[in-house]
Image (spheres, rainbow, N blue to C red):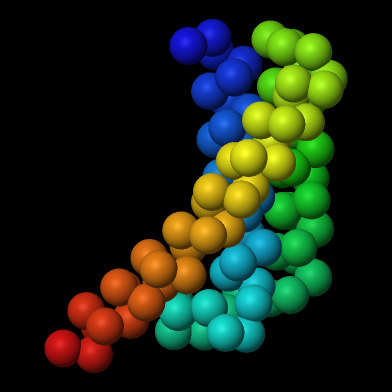
Amino acid sequence: MPLFTLLGLAATTLACLCVYAASPNQRLWTTPWPLWPARMSGAVLLLLGWLALTQDMTRLTASFVLGTALMLVLAVLPYAGALTHVRRIR
């Protein structure tokens, strides 16, 4: 897989993590991250992820890959948080 595609997917995953961690209902950590810095860094990482993806593919394809990665990661993070929360309680 090309380098910029991997960097774009990593930046997108980190952006989703930042946005999810700022949510008051997240369960990965005991307290949510500060709202404004986490959302701002998530937006910057999303932009950097899209720019990295456009280095290896067309803009339309990069947008589709970015949207698909967003859906995947934002769907998996609540389950990872629930698993972490259950293990922390035990």
